[in-house]
Image (cartoon, rainbow, N blue to C red; front, side, top):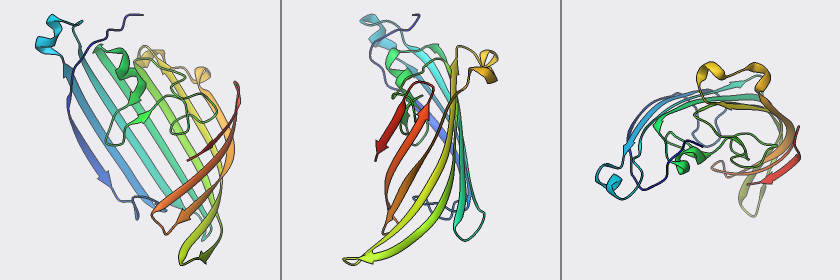
Length: 201
């Protein structure tokens, strides 16, 4: 209710601070991103409902090596949509790496993709990654890690409506295979209040 549909583009700006030791498989450092986009369909509003909205997205990711084998990764995403927002804009989270949300393997494992949506989205992903071993097979370097994870997320019409007890939670475990240090095979098994969830990416 209360959303519009039509055709438009958008312009945006993004500010990034990145101290990760590796962009694909980071083990230490931080990644901060502030993203803003605005959209208005202008003359197209003669034929479609008027679209005039703004998207503010903040991403904070941190990586801590605890031992030679154990690494902790944590990400927080906070996003606010304002204005006459088109229906399709609710289906993704902004920033330089756009993801589907909230729900699914990229945001809230244990729930269907895009399970929850509203003007305000807040989610976290925390993983404990443990190095299990490595080997070279057919001249390819493979590294295996076991993972325990905790995902949280919630949506609300306004920031003031966010409530700790409205948070959706998934816990689970998985495996990561790092292939030649620049390609990741990911398998996860998550348990939430709604379902048991498996994914392979």
